[in-house]
Image (spheres, rainbow over the protein chains, first blue to last red):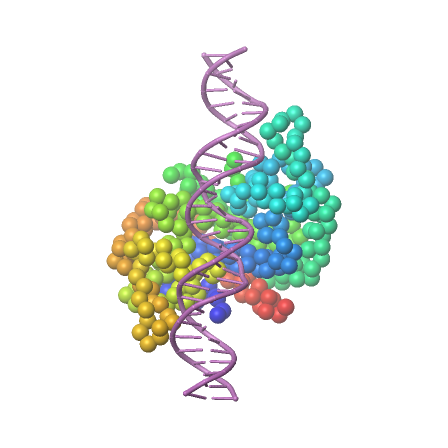
Length: 160
Length: 160
DNA sequence: AAATTTTAAATGTATCAACAACTATTGTCG
DNA sequence: CGACAATAGTTGTTGATACATTTAAAATTT
């Protein structure tokens, strides 16, 4: 059964274009996550784990404290300790107690983790899939609208 | 700790504007879901359950087969049977075997369910929160970009 | 009409998300 | 310094998600 947003929500009579856009964002995000889950499935890694690896690569060869990883995750509620432990078991990251502050733990991506990311990005499908779906201009516009939406929402929530 | 996308992903050096937009969608969707989770928390209902209720209201006073509810849900993998059962236990929906096809089950929102939705929508916060965050034009533009993105992505995935 | 296939829903399960609660360490303030 | 608060991380719990499997009924094929 094909699923298109316009069909899915056709009956809804949205209270406003804004409410419709909000649902559309969630709907689209679900589809994106489904796609990336399917791409990653053969590699035995969840999309959140994949995201954490990319965060750590962004810092390599330096480390992040666990807290800093959490701060950069897409979903700030998922449990960083356990996610990182999964990655450690696979050999993709290392943990080391931080010198000078025994509360903190530093996380570092390993060579194996870096190679793994490279391998994934060599897949032709992951290279082009998004780039063909929007022009560069459209993508910029989209990002900018999302940024506006979030920043205004945040201001509104803070007021309450 | 404040979370802004530009900060969160500053280190990432995206391969393209399109890949960045995709992550931005997921990031924004997570924030939207967090907001609605928080709004709904005092009412002891998850946002997926809330969504299913609104789907059923869109059909009231007619019914949907369970399958049709599933088709309209934002997340097609969540388990409709169990979600609907939760709503039934709260008295918000009724289930009735379908006449003429004993495989199907028809789902109907109750008076209590409708009243509950009304109550939620009376909250000042849920009335305006999205509408103030974007202009109507921006919301339309955003929806249209998301629709384009999804529909192109779908075409690309089908090709593979 | 019997056998087979398809469809609708329910159920089982492993993993993950969304918290709350706890432990251990460090910071701060009288 | 000692008490208390704040911070970093871990652990526990409950419920939801992402499937796979099963059950039952209907549709289709032979």
